[in-house]
Length: 213
Ligand SMILES: N[C@@H](CCC(=O)N[C@@H](CS)C(=O)NCC(=O)O)C(=O)O
Image (cartoon, rainbow, N blue to C red; front, side, top):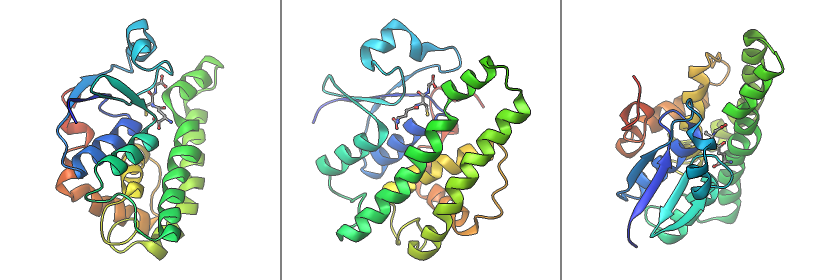
């Protein structure tokens, strides 16, 4: 495999997931920052990369892959070691269910474009904050017993999986929006432990070339 180029934004959680996956696989990649605050993702140039105008996009020898979960599955199929999914089909299903609670049910309703659309409808900041807290809270309430049951250090078992690729960025995001995480001790413990893994720590927003800290 030749050059990997990740179109990313330092604080955005979907590219953060892919950075974790790339680092866990030990893959070197080039980094193309997309300034979401300035709206660079909506420009014509980035539209040529990803017609959905969202990050991440991963260029592999000039071929463009989009959608963080399917990029992570592609990574796992192409570079099976270390695996991002357990071997047993029921276990794989649980890890995918944990991941999709975050990637399909929490994240899409709190994405930048949704919050901007709410603001355009003249929804005030306190109501927007309530919106974000509600959907993260509902998703985490479902995830907490799953992590408590299946986690053994990491979100599922004792090694990083696809679930950690999704959980670590979502907990980072929840803290950024000052969500009260005390009702979710198992989930927070798993995310904080995963965040210390060197490959996952290297993917942290503050460690990206476009970080503004
Ligand atoms: N389902 C997509 C979501 C991608 C996505 O929403 N990315 C956000 C950043 S986390 C984005 O590019 N937002 C730009 C915007 O809302 O304008 C994936 O998992 O890749």
